[in-house]
Amino acid sequence: MTPPDLSLPNDVETLKAMVLAMAEKAARAAALESEVADLKARNADADARIERLTQILKAFDRARFGRRSEKLGSANGDDEQQALVFEEIETGIAAIKAQVSKGRAQADGKRAPRRRKGFAPHLERIETVIEPEELAEHAG
View 1 (spheres, rainbow, N blue to C red):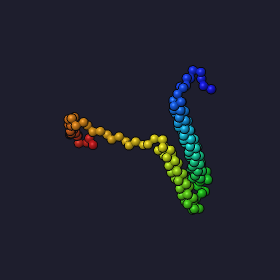
View 2 (cartoon, one colour):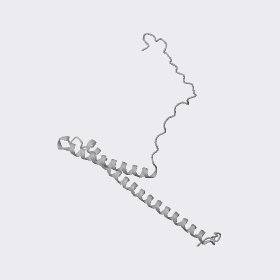
View 3 (tube, helix red, strand yellow):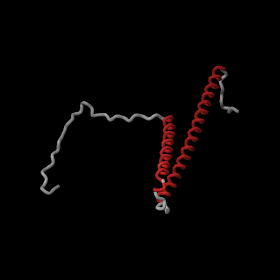
View 4 (spheres, one colour):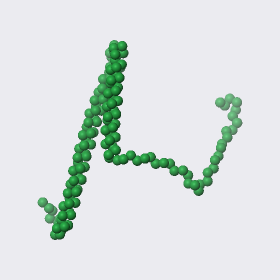
């Protein structure tokens, strides 16, 4: 199983250290694989939710702007139904944003924006005011 050009040390302690290093690498690889699988599952779930919300929005747009939209008056209690649709959409969007931000926060922390530096103290500051020339009467 080992390549013929690989020479292993005869020292038992060195061999033990090599085996421990290999075990640590295998553990890190397994942890990374499980994290990748978790992120893929989150991504698939977010895609499914986005698809569902898109379908709800399309159905709502069809009801609002479609051929029969004028037949559906708001006197039928559609305001409550519309409020429920918007509430469901807002809840879904908030859940997706929270899930995505949770995944991103684990991947990399947000850095604070850099502050702008002022001029160096040894630079001379000159304040110049430019006055406009006299304007003609009808210049504006």
